[in-house]
Image (cartoon, rainbow, N blue to C red; front, side, top):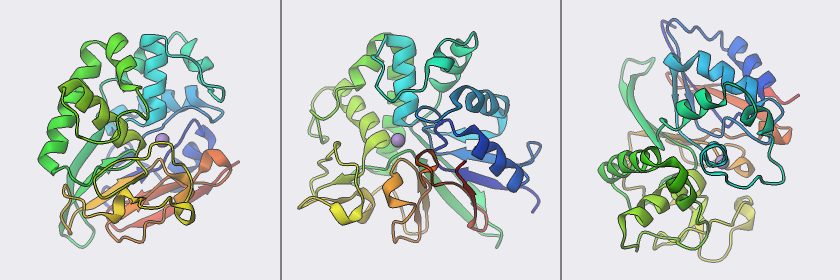
Length: 278
Ligand SMILES: [Mn+2]
């Protein structure tokens, strides 16, 4: 392979497995790219080393922010409270913390690029952390992504606080632009299931066999932002263990931080490389 794009599921501070995976795929930072689905840090043992490595590789990294990355940014910029399973202390107390925060706050919620597959055809790849609200067009997604990035970057202290409103606003029937951006950010970083009207149940974290009445995984709806020929990768939902039963929507969070596996997917030919936890 001349050059390759490797997508990696939620690392969550599992540095050892990340490093092992880079060796396994023979990652070449002269020509390859890494696509990270977000939640790079927290809960796992080595958030600091993980950030150091990703920062070192940053010119070869495409990434989107996950809910844990946002939580870190909110702790750094706006004194958000520690959660009981946080493992961010080492990063927050490190002299390079500012550098990492400034790197992360520049990252998008949605990333998309056309790549050339090994069969010679071109494919649009869309990457998000958790998923997409099905009623949004791709143009709307790009526009809201830009505005959301601007929103948190222009006043991180104040605006990062605002986006953590959690379960109160659950769909797009929202009037103010800031509420809309806040909803967009929460949806892209935390969605798992929703109903026909796009109402998201943010508190749900289980698997497909425990779906509440009237709710379906976001990817079971017709996703307006995607064409049949596009390909979407996401992380976040470890209980799925990567399975969506859709050919062009692939989950990459295989629960490494919960003792399962870290998944690397070569986008050119869909070859999967798995690293066992531990
Ligand atoms: Mn997540």
